[in-house]
Length: 300
Image 1 (cartoon, rainbow, N blue to C red):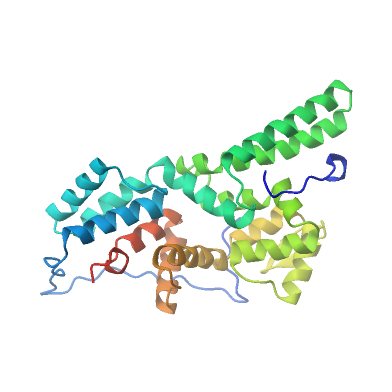
Image 2: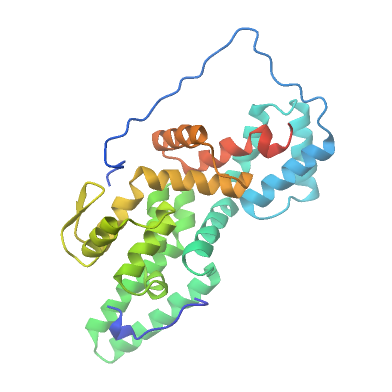
């Protein structure tokens, strides 16, 4: 993996909880039907604006511009349906269903958490460690061989995270945990304190408090400790607690707004979108809702 310093192999040694000092209630907002409520008039929106919208969707969601056929097909479909929310949902859902959407989620997370390593870089890293493990086995050193095998499995878990997320065999919480639970992340954030701080910043979008840092360090080092009102005594317990917290969900909402709208959500948007996210537990729907708005489409 590029930008990762190698260290000696021999030295390498959930429940959903929303905790902000008190229990938080999730508000459920029902759709209301208003009499004489007319849909917005999009007759003034030009074909160029619709083309720009479709291009932006492809770039933001799957990292590529549409082909000329894809562009013309999607633009024609949207215009034929008067740029309705339902038609936008169809186009956005089609893109979110593509493997490229999940590959982009993976690369975006890698850019943030593992020094922008690519899947190709990670694959070569896995092959290297597997080769070293084979040498230990050949020399009869089963202990170190099995130790490296365990680390290799964590890298394989990371490598597969995007495809398994697409297949719904893992959830978004597990997806992000895999970026923190591997030797690459450990090498980038060497030492328990750096690991705890980086995990808070990457998963919750903030620095830990003094007490949170102390509790996190103790937990990661194997001491039974309370964090966010939850007990744990291992690194995986620590990551489970962080990714089950409401702040984790809020941070994912903020990430989506920053990526798609280049701004932070308002307090109302944060509350509504986080509540919806918690209820349906589908990270993809946060992207979908934003991408269907007039603000994102620039149809205002």
